[in-house]
Amino acid sequence: MAGRIPRSFIDDLLVRVDIVDLVDSYVPLKKTGSNYVARCPFHTEKTPSFAVTRNKQLYHCFGCGAGGNAISFLMDYSHLDFVEAVEDLADFVGVQVPRESSSSQVPAKKNNTAEIFQVLEQVAGFFIQQLRENDSAKVAIDYLKTRGLSGEVAREFQVGFAPDSWDTLSKQFEAQQLIDAGLAISKDGGSVYDRFRGRVVFPIRDRRGRVLGFGGRVLDDSLPKYLNSPETAVFHKGREVYGLYELLARNSKPERIVVVEGYMDVIALAQFGVTYAVATLGTATSKEHLELLFRFSTEIVFCFDGDKAGREASWRAVLAAFPSLRDGRQIKIMQLPQGSDPDIFIRDQGLEAFEGNATSAQPLSDYFFDRLGQGLNLDDMEGRASLVNKAKGYLQTLPNGVFQELMLEKLKKLSRVDKLDFFQKPTTLGQARHKKKQEDTNLSPVRIAISLLLQSPNLIGVIEQKEIHWQTLNFPGIALLKKIVEIIEEHPDINLPRLIEYFRGQDEEKYIHIMMNHDFFISGDEVNEEFSGAVDRLIDQGREQRLDELIAKERASGLVEHEQKELLSMLASRT
Image 1: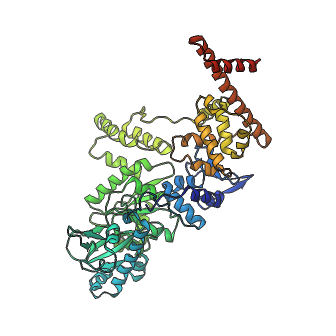
Image 2: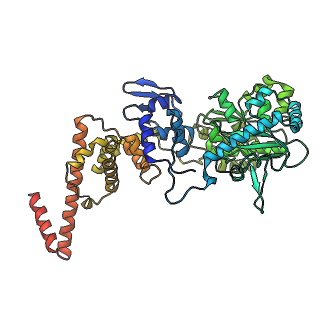
Image 3: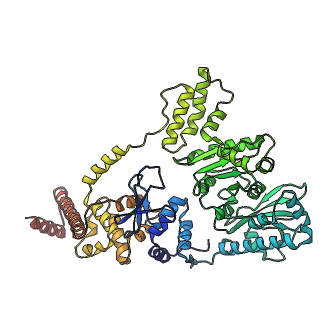
């Protein structure tokens, strides 16, 4: 990376954004009183329990407990890391993300992602130009025509051509930039040569349209047939899929996404009207791939080649999918005839047949148990026991929920075993509510103070009016309360969404999220009184604790002069 994102920019970003507008662009909200509500996007529910509060600039689900500020929402909803969420939020409000340069050293060029993105974009344009203008590109054009590719689809996917030369790019661009972008390979003598030569090239773009790398297909019988860019500072093939940008440009919320094996499968399907296909980049389908795709659709269909390798790829993809199968998500497997692939199938059978097969594809549950039961005789006890043993480990990777329970019920039915319980039972809603009631009635003064100060940082004025000797307050939570006080004193205009960011990734983050959502059902002057009372009780507890310490020491070993005076003063103040 080019440097850290300045804290001041994050604070300013959270001030600029309106969380209601942000969330509403992902989850349609309905105004109810002072809040905006919807069904929670993070768990399945029949009635809305997800609330967004404009005056606090926070969201909170009273069902599953999800909550936070605008950055947290993007991280949770789109499965982004912190930096990606900040970049998305900056895009939403129309500002650029600045970076801090290190004071100790100048960042190496290889970590300058802006330069890498720039050279990748320029090279993509150069390859397109070569396909149009280079005389040697005729073989590439002929190949694309034999595959039935139209000029319109070639332009949409920015298909290009890399001439069969060792130094085409190095003559046009700086060598180190090409190496950093994965476009050139360095030799021992210090010279470089082009990675992609004599190939049709396919730019791999992220969902923002930025070129991350390339895939290239040879135009003769040489190997490897397909070549991908290597891992770079901007390209991680285990996290990206080909065709996602083009898919989302046509439909940001597709009903389903079809996952295929190759670039030409994606392009051929788009040519025939299936504009919701993507391909993994020479790697097995991973949990990261699926989490990315589930951001945009609740149904994913695996459609791999109809050969042994394709069938094995389907099975591996299904197993990789288990940890991602939360309620509301669905995976299907579209099995093609032997010797066929998505490109061949749609050319032979047509769009209607392909879409019909995708719609009626086999659900993951049926596919899983059919595959697991192959070779087993479920009419005898040994076969059924073997099925249970095989299925157990896989089912335990499923997230808790209705789908997990239904998969267990299906295994019970197939194995004819009534009592199977592989899962740790989650706390029921009634138990959770009862536990919360008990916690509410037993909140300590320090918890009350933390919760109220988080929700209303302006209460710092109450702290400033009281004489607090922090060193005498030696019980759990005081360190966190003091830290919050110090942050607010340093940033007097801070609000809760900005305050949360100071604890992101810290040990206290989980506790902060619990306490910031506590509702005391009070307002106005009552908040000040409750907070002031909690602080007074903290001070009193500190005094009592100190008094007990002095008395214990006096009995054990005696007190020095200043401790005797302190003890007498404290005893006098109690009378």
